[in-house]
Image (tube, rainbow, N blue to C red):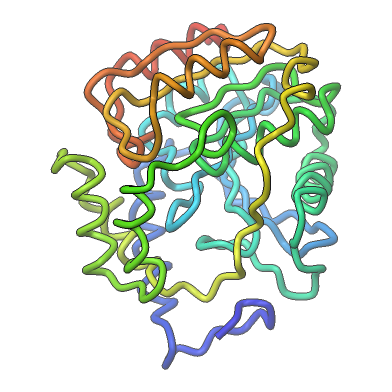
Length: 293
């Protein structure tokens, strides 16, 4: 059943189980965390916020698939020391955002309009903006669209921004995408992460998101090279050394050739889907140094 109607059929999907798994991961967030619901023309967006209210805002966008704002739990406390953190559940995707009553998101222009409306609803003029994977793709497009609203940009193993997917990755993902199940999600994540130790509550949330009644995600081309060359904001690009999603060094090389103010680092011994929660300490150090935390 589509989530466009705003109601979930419990016989078709265990939404209560998903919410319980979501809340269990959110319990790992700082205790001052509060849940916000921001209305946009595309429906209601759920945002998890923490950190000093008068601190500079930092917007965090999760990856695709079963990723939600909850995935930032391992980084939230450190980032929230000097930032007002706003972690977003992508509208129309797994999470607690609700597209009921809103226009469907169909194009990149819709995504950037949604993010503009979200910033307006939060009362944020300019912000640091960060994203992982698909969320990084959205972040780049928004920075190109509205560079005056982005103070700095960090990209965590971004997909479809500087290089395409590996064929082997897409082939491995295909059964999970065609007929999602908890078993297939777990098997895919274990393959991509090389059997790394993943947080069991986070993994259960990914399994619970299988079959979530979500809209088809907006996809599209990579940001135009000329637009990237004209993006005059500080960018931190962190790529996963063991990523099976794309060629890590191709991503770093192309980004370095296109972005005028980019700082790049390869995170050792971590894969694409282990980010951002099961990351090496270097991730936190790099983010804190870049943001001045």
